[in-house]
Length: 124
Image 1: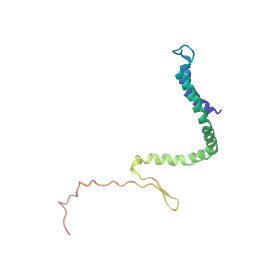
Image 2: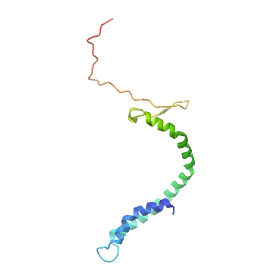
Image 3: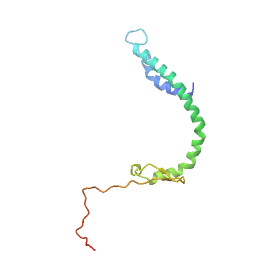
Image 4: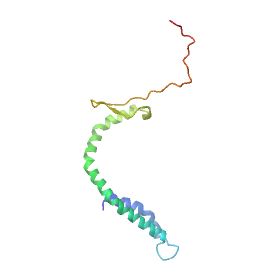
């Protein structure tokens, strides 16, 4: 079993272990609730193990590439995060045919109830 899986199982099993150490109400060891929780966690562990092993292999495979990406793009991303205060003011990024990526700012529409002030305007 992998170290990550052991930590996950230990974290999930901690409440069950605490219950198992306390005396049960019937005096015969584990109560039905404790036994049910133990079996549930054991089944959960068995069901999750293949997926976690697959994810670990994926992380091991892609890890060096992600590290390289963050080393190269990290400073540029940080400067972008410093410049953009509110991401909700922008449309989703668009990629142009030439490969450029653009961020368009959303245009705020003027309220419909405000009409322009034409008092000081003259006709030409």
